[in-house]
Image 1: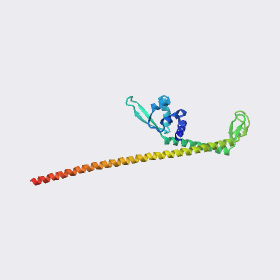
Image 2: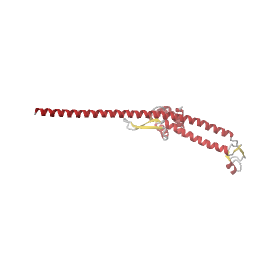
Image 3: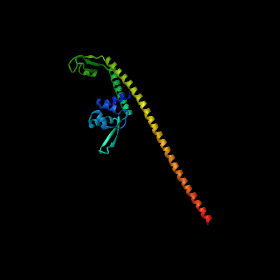
Image 4: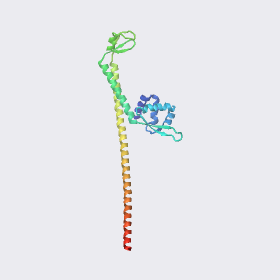
Length: 228
């Protein structure tokens, strides 16, 4: 399910030719851009153009490394799954808002349609042309918007179902990120704890050495006093 959502985002952003990028990068990390170009069968410039269009929205992230042998920089790409899902969520949410506005107009306004050429206008524009089609001169008839209203409702319902699925994926992805963050925090805590222990051991050793030195010095002084 998740990969299909990401493919939709990529297609909406960079066109159908970019969908293959999802299969190449999904659940992978830091993929060489020249390898991507080879797999896509495109030039490096064509590939970079697609990658940059996706990175502009934060869908892809990259790191840059210098090729020691050739001296130029190579980019390595990774999908930002969370950002991809958020972009699609926002896109579909905007579509739902537009469809609801369109539905409200269809339910509250009257529209007129030309039977000859199919041109449809609202009542205001129909009044301007005296209810005559400006394209072919045919008289407008009152349009029955019932089929369009039902179709728009179905589109809204479908998008709402999709939106719920996306939000479920976002919650799951956030849980994964939270777990990774907790692991990182735990590792950092363990690392700091080990560093503190190492410092304490080093300090204890130094104190022990200092104590031994002082003890030896005192012993030497006592021996000198006895001899004298």
